[in-house]
Structures are given as C-alpha cells and as structure tokens.
Length: 113
Length: 114
Image (tube, one colour):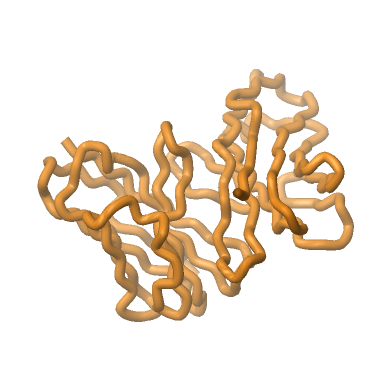
C-alpha cells in the first residue's frame, strides 16, 4: 500500500483565496483524521470521520473551514477565504479501528500571503 | 480536562548515550498512550503504544516506554542513541469516552551529537 496520500505537498496562496487540501486514506481504513500543526499551537485535531461520516468537528477553528468525505477513498479540507494565520502544515491520518495506530500522510505545507 | 505535557522542548545527547524523554498526562481513567516520531518534512510514525497489560512496552527502532500510573507518566527510553534518531517526538493520549481523539503533547526535539 502507498500509505496515506496528500496533495498538494506545498501550497502558496494569497489571502482571500480558496484553498482545497486533498487526502486519500489507506484502503480499508474506516477512520480519517485532519490535523493542523503550527509552532505556536502544536498538533491540533480539526475533524475526524468514521465510515465517511463526520463524528467530531469541534476542532475546526471557524466557519471558513469545511471538510468532506464523499467516499471511503477521498477527503477534502477547504478553507474559504484563507487568511495568513491559516499558514501551517495540515496532516491527514487514517486508522483501521478506533485506537489503532493512526497512519499519517506527509502533510501539506500551506502558506497564505 | 485531559492534557499531555512534555516538559522538555529540546534535548541534546551524544551518539551512543542513553535517552529518556518525559511525558506526563492528566486523565481520570486508564489512558491509551502513544509515542510518535516525526522526522523533518515527514508525517508522524508510531513508535509504540500502551493500552493495558505489561507496563513496559517495546517499540520499533529500539525504543521502549514505561507506564507509571502513580506518576501519570509514560516516558520514552532508548539505551543507545543513533544519529538517525534526531527528530521530534510526540506523546499522545487517547480518550475512552466514546470519542476516539488523541491529544498530542507539544513535542520534544532531539538533537544527536556525533
């Protein structure tokens, strides 16, 4: 298996633009997690899905952020409009069952100018 | 509220020396505990995990960790550090309350001197 795949690996955009981050979990995994990593706040869970259904989105910072999982092999995290404070590394992770190992993707480094 | 504390932001050790990274958690019940490692520009990789049973847990790359309930700690150890161990290490605790979220510590950055 190729592991968790994220695209793009790097994204540079201007304030106010829409940003879409993509994630393909490991085949057969039924949990998918989106995290944000910054120097100031560390690693934060934004939202997670179980069987394509959002279970907990309490970590989503504000309405500008939205996440979808239309099928078991694809998820998106969208920021609209983007702001400089959204600059961070965004990780997607998947796991086979609750409390099993979470497998992390390589991350998307987002820079909002 | 549940929390994880990694008191050491940076640690520097010489290659071949022993290593201990500290992790303390705050949680009412028996937690699910994890150590992850993150190399520069990479995602996180699981080193080891503790759910129950033997309090000394063996992981990959020669790492081990010991769960001490009385001290609310889950410290990571390695008897002899290699230069390739230079990375950032994260302790995490999982909740057993119906939501399957991890709370991550702020990380400890390890530097290894040749």
